[in-house]
Length: 312
Image 1 (tube, rainbow, N blue to C red):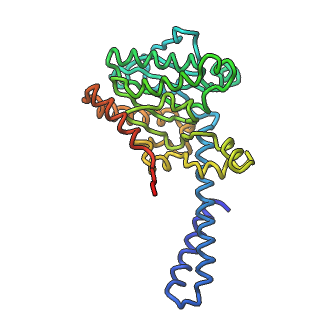
Image 2 (image 1 turned 45 degrees about the horizontal axis):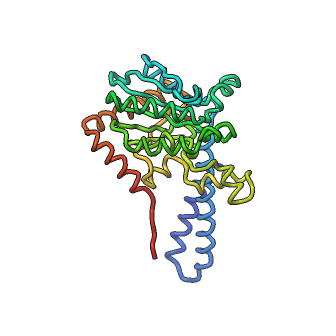
Image 3 (image 1 turned 90 degrees about the horizontal axis):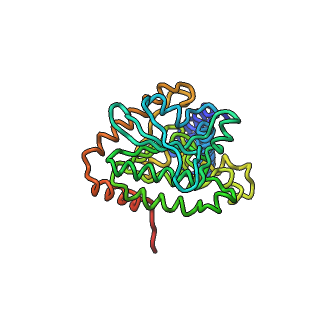
């Protein structure tokens, strides 16, 4: 059933349910049937919406980090290498000015065609990428520049070479050091925010998501393979994981949702960049008056307060 058909059917059921509730108790069996059908339809709607967001977050024409840099930071100068091993093209780093404000930018880049995807390793960073990112962020803190990070990766590269060079250590190091950077840090999930590969650049004073982005500890397909023993049930897992911007905003895990043009950011790069630029400018203005100590305290408090804990 289409989304429109589901919505209409839900309205019809709710009307019938309200009428039955005003009648005798003999209608109880019918009420229970209606409630069961309503629950099923609403569940199907949630599943469909979550999966649509996942598909848009992975859209092959969705704007990537370099597309936003081109429109928001025209004087961008790229910085290469981690000064330990080499250059990782899956992460873009550099500096420039955003609407007159000097900033340091770190972003994950997937690549567009086959050649670019191979160069960018499909947006999956290796340890040298995360160490390059940390080098640039420490430089930003030294010179008092705000850091902006763009998250767009299916996850950190899981290859043997990455593990040999300390993939887990590089991610853990970034998590610790980003939490105590003495400069404003703004994080934006622009596409697919996958697992620790995204979180390694995700510790910020402000965390935003584009309207059709996703942010998750695991991909829906991998989750389905573990939980349901069937990777084809990724659509169902996507809903259960609560990975959309709306879900995460309600759970208090992000600070705001940045709108996209109708149909998704891939439909109008310029408008998508304008919306993103407005959100970044507002966040920078809010964080700029804060001292280094206040920024660190706000950042740490923000992440410590995440999650719900129950005790018996």
